[in-house]
Image 1 (cartoon, rainbow, N blue to C red):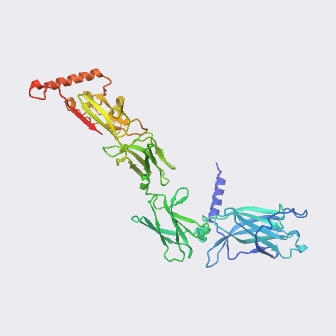
Image 2 (image 1 turned 120 degrees about the vertical axis):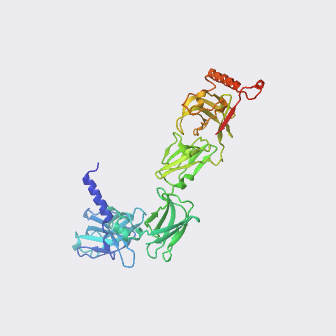
Image 3 (image 1 turned 60 degrees about the vertical axis):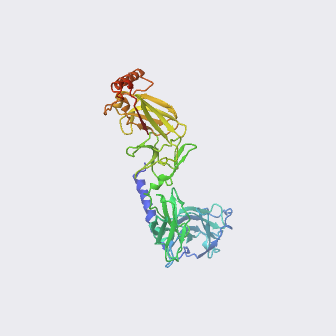
Length: 509
């Protein structure tokens, strides 16, 4: 844990770096203390890059106390600029002809050097005299990382000073207000949805300075969504038209001045328009893979779900939930039934997309056919498939608890279920689903037509279902009872033509 004193110190330091006022200068220059005249000239730094052994009489602390700060040069009619203010103390010596100060940008690897010479340097009266040198002619950029060195001329080994320095960035209120790189400009926009064009109007930009505007998709960085446009500084109309393909939530308008290291302003006006994100669903019939790839970063929970025919509600399929994908959500071995859908849930709501609803992919159907007290279940499909059939009690709209045995069946085959009186008086359903895939929607037939039993029954309590593979004796008794009832009520007036009742009913889903 950080102590309260350290926390307060960090807050003070951050506030200071963010808000302190940068000293102003009108002209840059060089000055030396103690009445010593000095002058400077640009230097390449190459001829003084190699060092020599220092004379025995030369003190190793001849250079000391280098200090660096930032100053702002503001001249009326021109934009302000940032400069380094470098101070150092040198003890003069007859073995020293001057001083070299260099800056190296660790961002661009560009260097600047000046060579400082002292008037009367040959006079022995100056030996041992300390002089403070100050220069502020090194121009720097916002947020630049600088490496400063100060060494003697000639360059004596181990007699030099080094220091790293970070130039203030645009978070500093003074820098952000007066330095052009931080004056990113403000813009307004209008969307022409018919032509898919965004018209951007720029204001508060630097006078007579070119300005860049572009569209980008914001991930970790803002990736290009088309070429950038240039608004010329001399043009009176500061506007540009940008073409877009989709109004995605990560689509941003970005603008910046046409100067090195310029600060950029971003506006992302469509961040709540997430509807377009859910259209990028792709199905590969060769691998049976259903995939969704986000066009923008989004916090979302993705589920496969079953679209209910009765109320258009999409019931989540168990163990299909995936959260906050970075790149892609993928489901392998997926059934292509029209009621199998993808659900996307965010803090703004939920969206359901059913990629197979248009009938472009093969689908299967479950059908029941009832004859003589038995319910036959079979499946039709354009492709080879395996299915399971379950007799169940419907407890809720989307729930069905097992009330019998599972049966496996292939396309073209069927399974028969012996019906009882109690089954027609309960909420019995026939449930079927594909078993040769990993993700399938279960379909249910619940409104079973019991007319083939010869009576009409009202709703009753749940009862246990029986299949043709079990309880055969009770099923045979059922057939016998049905024949006796039908004998009492012949189909024809002529009793000689009396026949057992044969009623049939069917249901397809």
